[in-house]
Length: 247
Image 1 (cartoon, rainbow, N blue to C red):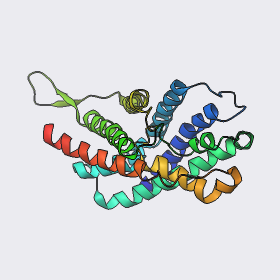
Image 2: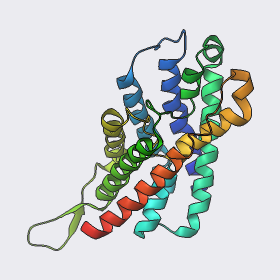
Image 3: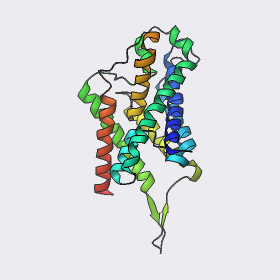
C-alpha cells in the first residue's frame, strides 16, 4: 500500500468512526442520543486504535500533521515526505466527514441545533476565550506527541548486556496510543473538544463549509479554525524540543 494512500485511508477511517460517535451522541433521534462524554472519548480512542492497526505497517499511521511534524522535528521522519502526508491526512479527514454525513443524513435533517450539527464535523470551545483555547490545544498536543516519542523510543537494557529491548505490545502496538488519546480526552478535552490534530478539525470543517453548509444550514465557524491548527503545531514543536532536551 502506498504510504500516502495509507495516510489518506487511515485518517478517513479514523474520522468516520470518531466523528461518527459524535453524531450518534449529539444528533436527534439516534440510538445513542445524549449518551455522554465517556462514550465520545472511548469511541474516539477505539477509532484511533482501529486506524493505527490497519495502516500502521504501511505508513506508520501518523494520521495527524502534528505527529508528522513532531517526528520530522525530532529527526525521525523525512521532511520531504511531510507535505504529501499532510495533504493525504486532510483529504482523508474530508472524506471521513462526508461519510459521517451519509450515514447520519436523516438525523442531521431531524436536528435543528446548529452547534450540535457542527460538532459532528469540527471542534468548538466550551468557553470561547482564544488564548485559553490555544493553551489547551498546545498542552493536549504536547502530551500526545511527547508520550508518542516515549512509547516509540523507550526500551530496557537486559542485565549484563548492552542490548536494548523495545517496550511494546507486539501486534497490539496501537493500544498504547489509543489509551493515550482516551486519557487526553477524559482529562483535558473538556475545554476545546481536544482536536490535537489539525487534519481532524480542518478536513471536516472544509467538508462542512464547502459542501454541506447550505444543506445543513450550519456555519463552519471559520473564526475559530486557526486554534486547532496553530495550537497542535506549537504543542508538537515544544514536545520535540523538550524530548531532545531531557531524553
